[in-house]
Length: 548
Image 1: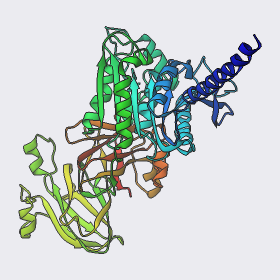
Image 2: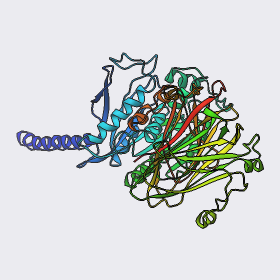
Image 3: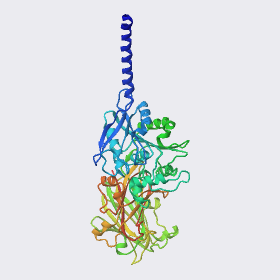
Image 4: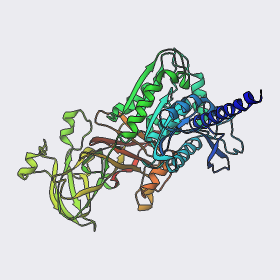
């Protein structure tokens, strides 16, 4: 018996050692008990559960963002997905974030409403990006409310910092202002949760859209994979809202898919995990979208023209060392052929330099240089005006008024004939918003081959301090593509993209003015300024700035 016992002990020892080693190896791919990734401004401690792959890092990081109607839930709902991601070679961080009422985290003293939850997610993106176990790349998989946060963080923020590199969204709600009734599932829960999350009523569209990825995404949005089940409790039109926006931006780095059944969010993870993992791998390997300096190649503004303060004043800035050849046109009578009513009979144009001196003037165009004719810029009516000029770097203003005291609708245009020599870095037009049906319509073309960053502003109340009488008190701004689709809209710039606008260093001077920061593909765009709230009238300034 002693010999048998002696022989048995080494076997037990060997078996125990094997089990310990096996457990330690398996534990590498499992979760820990939670690490602190940040402290919220209200003092709430924010934690994530880490699922670490086997082997040696660093690895790409994937945040796993839970749902729960913005008011409940926790990292445990994405545990299976996080474990699968770790097994696929990602370090997965299943995060918690502050919750809207009636939910809350331990120590949370704030209400957890927008933008607090997305602020927490962006904090997690930064924390993961700088974690020594991560290789600097950060994606996310989010379900339900977590899918909203995933899409939001893929569409906003700074690439390489707090913006995701790639995202997978399971059953997301992307336009919180779209509370349409879906007869297939109803939308009582979605509507309640969306309004509770933002803390507003259904009539507060601007606030709801400020929290909506479908209203914030631009051409620089990170790659997104969007899933929705056939009988998903999330209204089906939410997926359509997001894909329609991405299509209008001509974004090609997204995919969407419909999953069989009635599952919601992480319920159908096992069905889509292979697609999700492959998409994440491709997203991490893809180069980021190249964003170049914006090149504004021409601008046009259609508005009502009157005498005095009602004259249209278009400004532009030329930067660079070489002189720039430009063509300015004031069109009006020919607009009647396009169905425009009440056109200005005889527009007159003056070009002023930065001192205010008149350096060119035209009333009724005559002979034009051959290159202007070749560019197709000959006006259709002899009463219209054209100025052709070669200008050094500096700021200039074109003023359009009617002959005598006449008034009416006119179109003011600026064309850049040699975009390679120097740059139009800013274009603006001050004009009258006559009514909701007679707004300022400003168009601009982005040249080049890369996505360009611009800020578009609608200024009204600030003009009073510059001596302008009858300024539009509350201008709203829409930005549309060449098809007429609304890409972005804003009413009161601090309600949406406040940080992005401040980062440009040229935020509007009044909270009731509007601004949009966007990354746009080359093409033509239209900015529309009106008083959408009251349909009032007044003088406003619409501007587009090229951002570096």
